[in-house]
Amino acid sequence: MINGWSQEHLAETTGLHRTFISLIERSECNISLDNVEKIADAFGLSVPELLGAPDAAAFGEKLLTMFNADKKREQS
Image 1 (cartoon, rainbow, N blue to C red):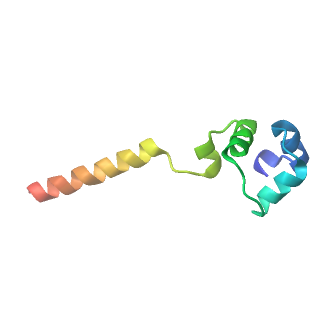
Image 2 (cartoon, rainbow, N blue to C red; image 1 turned 135 degrees about the horizontal axis):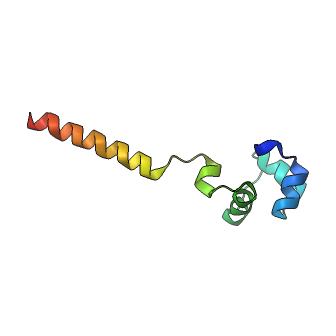
Image 3 (tube, rainbow, N blue to C red; image 1 turned 120 degrees about the horizontal axis):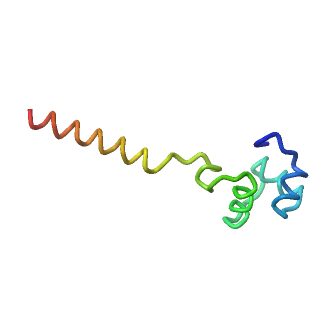
């Protein structure tokens, strides 16, 4: 568990049932966006952070840098 929390502690913090938390951990159920948001909020994270999504701004900057480098090579 993130932060060393038990399933019980996460369940209490989110208002979700402990057995549901267990099912989520084992990927044995579908989870709604509302419940993903509850879990993210409990950990003080955004949903993308919780899900390990890349930082969109950093990704965009890398793409722009690559694009600009390609254009410079073409102009040379």
